[in-house]
Length: 320
Image 1 (cartoon, rainbow, N blue to C red):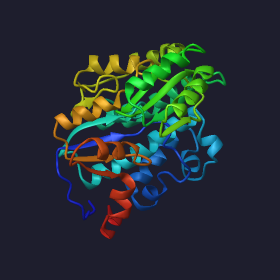
Image 2: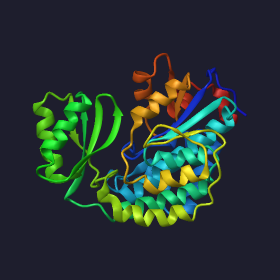
Image 3: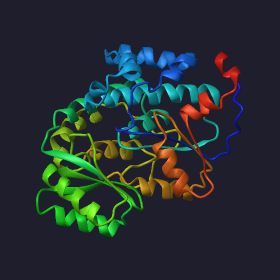
């Protein structure tokens, strides 16, 4: 086991990101430095029968942004980062895990509820069935800097032009709306007029986390029902409620409804505060969740995989 120079205080939360964090080059520094990460990538290629390393390391962006490609590729980077974490730090001080949307499946694997290989195949299927529902007439928009009441008012007004829902409540003033593109475009206009700090239509041709995903959700439920789930060894915080999932039945219900329900990440952060989490480690590309935690959990120490295992790691970790 390699030595790391960083002393992390427990309780520790391991977090896994979702779709939207992908970029060419993701995971390459872990792959180059750690045998455990190399093994994860190699196994993922065998399991997925996809050129995962080429896609993650080189792109092209257009290919990497496809829903059926993004999801297994992001999941592979999460797996590689988790294996490096497990070898370097172990799970002794890890008190909770959670993942945003797609990342929720990684959190199940991290908590021992399903093998990583099974999680990877589940994510491949998730990406496939979601890609089949993609189209020009649906989309998502991120709105930052407006309170929930104002975002809800915008949603209601924009809904006159098409169906629209709050898909993600990521923080008190950070939301994603999802639905028919006519309503999404109207929400962009209304949000900017209302003084939103940011109103950005996402490059995701999906109405994720809404009832418009029912066809994909029905197909995904068939895969979920076949899963050999086990009770988690550490609590998993649910996307929908922020509450700890501790039983097989609770995990199964969460996954069965995952595509249709809002991701309420703000509640997840409230739960982490209540659990007195002192260190958050985001295992995957980027630091979206770590940054949210830094803003919303007082006194928490936050890291992402790149910082922890590359930027601040002792040279001795090359022997891990």
